[in-house]
Image (cartoon, rainbow, N blue to C red):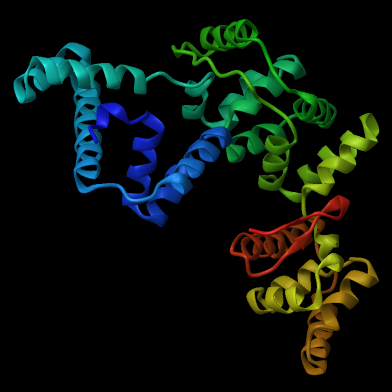
Length: 336
């Protein structure tokens, strides 16, 4: 089959399969959730791909990669001249058309290249709705830094608006983008997609935030909308939720966490949380942990939260790897 008959989505799926799991995972991390879902669904639909089709896709990718390189070095004209000299006018025209299509960016794409703390200084005095809209388009790690730097009252307001956001008209997105482009003296070309916000991006952002920011966001949401705050919590895993893990899962987690991190993480927690941990340890290990906790003496809250974050990260990694199952709110179970 000629690659001209294949959709861009199918070509991308074929390419990802050829790149292997590790490289494909790194690429998918850079994409938005709808793009990841579409690609993974297409990969699942792939069956046997003949050698000619595979070679054609890889060759097309190589041509596009070269064209993009020339584009960066010398602009569109230079790229086209080099391609014409390499493969002839007709083939060069095809490649340049695909290149042009591939270079259309998502809204606020230019902000991905701005340091989060620098971006924060520009966004801090914007309206909470504007901040929520921008954050919805940012990668979760970048958005977490921006959100954590806002004043607590603004932080809660932005989190609330982000969670209840559904669709935003392309005109509004363009207006906000143009406004920020002027402030940042950056040019960007907007794409058509405008579905942003909702619980998933908010939960992703909170999961990337430190524990202090996490608590402030959730406490602020509770004051504004208790039902919404509980829905957000239902999609998250907090340290106290360890009590909801079964004994086998606790034992798997304990094998992955260092005793010093566990000791600090358990400082000041509820008794039922500590008991859930210790009853899944040998008597000797439990006594050793108790001694380690008592030797620590007073510990800064920030250190406790950092240690708890280490444990939570291990739990999330184990869940994603399918080694444990974490029961979420509403009785659902999510299996990685």
